[in-house]
Image (cartoon, rainbow over all chains, first blue to last red):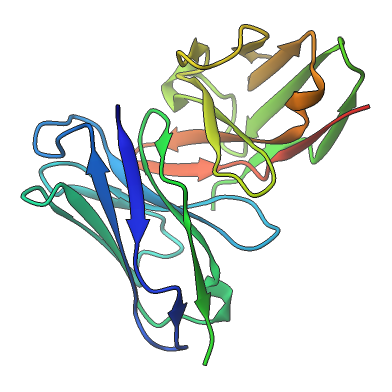
Length: 114
Length: 109
């Protein structure tokens, strides 16, 4: 059964870089034809797609965040990662990793504060 | 900036039928936008219900159905149950990018 799990710091200081990792079990990123991505949800607000990557490293990014976002994949660890630079309080959100087609991790709350 | 629009809120009586819609600022929504629908209850991660406009996941209750209707993607709930009260989000694919709708809060009353 496919499972995704986000991990990373729950607190990031303003202007720093937010880094999260998604560990995938039940499927191999090396052989999957799907895109794997990141979505976030600020408290009390809607969902926002951040970016996605496939097994070969081809990436797709939200144009509004593209200058600050990097999504990468490590097929040897069956993980993919999110890096969001120059964070502000507006980046405080629950961050989800997900596979195209409907499998999501439980999410992790990241707070940007000093 | 592409905008995907959903009804902010809808109310339905138990046992009733309700249709939620998803419109694109670029024009008519077609199967090429691969519409997805998600349900989210408070404190939980979103759960996928529908993919590629009308395809159900193995866990999607039979009372949920997806379609393309009048240039929009649509999610219809037939025989609504109290546990269907939740936020519902659509997702459209645009040539490599993905855009979520703002969500519809469905109240069962």
